[in-house]
Amino acid sequence: MKTIHHGYPKAQYAFSPAPKGDYLAFLGRIAPEKGVDRAIEIARRTGYPLRIAAKVDPADKDYFEARILPLLDAPGVQFIGEIAEAEKSDFLGGARALLFPISWPEPFGLVMIEAMACGTPVIAFNQGAVPEIVRHGVTGFIVKTVDQAVKSVERLAEIDRVTVRATFERYFSVEVMATSYEVAYTEVLDGRTDVRSLRLAESDPLVPAASSGAHPVVASLAGRA
Image 1: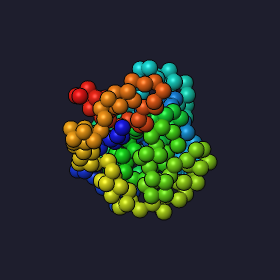
Image 2 (image 1 turned 135 degrees about the horizontal axis):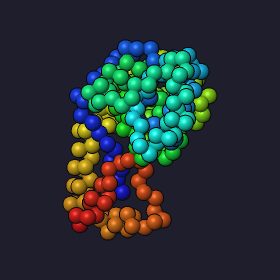
Image 3 (image 1 turned 120 degrees about the vertical axis):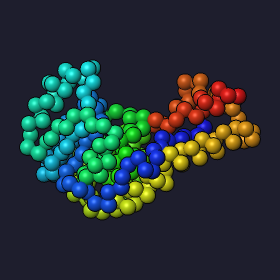
Image 4 (image 1 turned 120 degrees about the horizontal axis):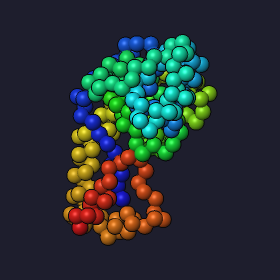
């Protein structure tokens, strides 16, 4: 069984060798599991402004109005709302770090590699696919608590933004994703992978699924056998 991660074209996001602003960023959607309330607390305790670029789905409107809206009046908190794809490079590239304070087993978290493509470090809670994406101390920091996240913000000078971008290109570019698919298909066609065992793994509820939002290459390969 292979895990193939998502990838983006290298040119889709512009690299920022230094943050253009002096703020922390939150990008995604407003939902309990995404932890924007944690992001606000982290920013407040570090003294850095927080810019929130996030959409509010109808299903989360009540949560937003009851739990998050009152927090947006805090000093230094700026709620931008949903932004377009073309705006992400400036938003992420201008930030000192992306805060990713999730509280659920995130299948992948595209926003993490979007930030990395801009050279922006990621401070993420240790849930779901986070350990597959973030290299602790290299492309950001993996934390378990708000206290640890606050301390990680203080360590951002240790992260080399050139290395963050290079890691994105090495592991999460669309070229790497396409090559990984090519290798996987070639192994099946050459008989180096037992497709019957892949079918078993896919259907057996006792076999854990491949972690993260990796592409469902097992299902694709098994279906072609």
